[in-house]
Image (cartoon, rainbow, N blue to C red; front, top):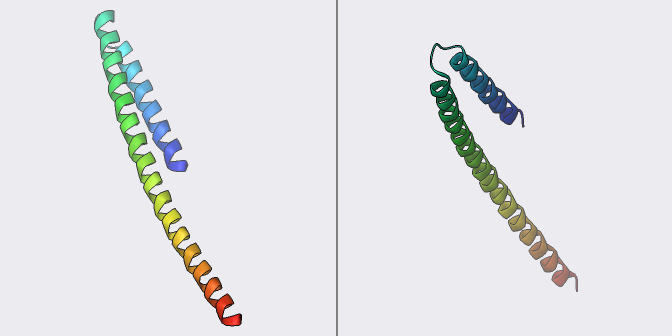
Length: 88
């Protein structure tokens, strides 16, 4: 969770800095607004990509842990079933 907050903070700061820098630049308003929109779209696209990569990574790790847990569960059930057969 901390990594996500740090990434969000860095991206937000970068967007704010870029917007302020462009607003104070000596260009036409239309050009400045177009640049802000283009940069915003780039940052949003990059952020979405990073979030998707993070979600895929977490999903793969979760599936791996789940599969290992299910394997251990099956082993335990097999041992319990084997022990019960010996007792009877």
